[in-house]
Image 1 (cartoon, rainbow, N blue to C red):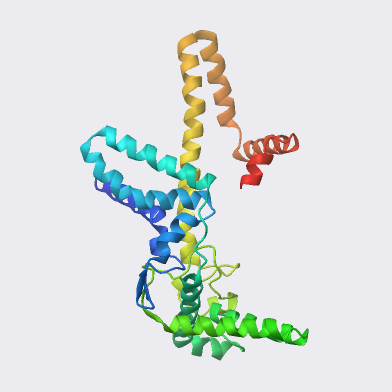
Image 2: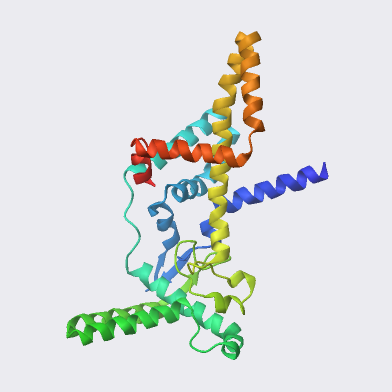
Length: 303
């Protein structure tokens, strides 16, 4: 009984992490006081993502407290809240909102990269400098290097106005970040799983495990948080597909019985006896045939 409770608590924690991943790891703050005005940048990003998986979980994160509240009033309000949630999800997929790419979005990212660079340099700068040469491969240093290279390139091509415009934008970001009076970042990581967090294989050898980055320079811990969403979706999808196949076959075998039941039972036993590798090859062959016939073109374009 105790082990069952522990297992249930772990599964529940896993689901909570999947639903509320942006509140644990995200590049935008939960709350920001900028120019004397209160902003909630993360809330806008939750509903403007272009990834249906994240949009589904983000919408669930916002509406889950409401569904838990109406659950006390009976099944009718609960089913109505679920239906409304699915309707809003469908509308946001069909008519996506404009991403929050305004000035505050850029300013908070600029401020976040600089603060993270100062923290990494203070904590790991000496250890990195003792083993390797060059500047720390943080997102801030990459941003500075990209800015300097772009300005130098435009000046070399004789486009002084473009270079001055880039320098003016940089100055505006510096001024805007200085106007941030208070910023409340997500609880654990200031990056999400899709943006560059800096880092390199060399830097990974000197930083703690929670500051590790992947080969594509995304934050490792944030990727783990957002990866729980994919694993839950795949697991739930596999169960639904199994139920969709097993229930009709079981009903047919139970209704007709005798020869039908015997034939279906033997086919299922043969299928279960096949190694997983050959079943994967069969699934790949079927998918390739479907792609060649054009059946999956729309699905691939959607992804």
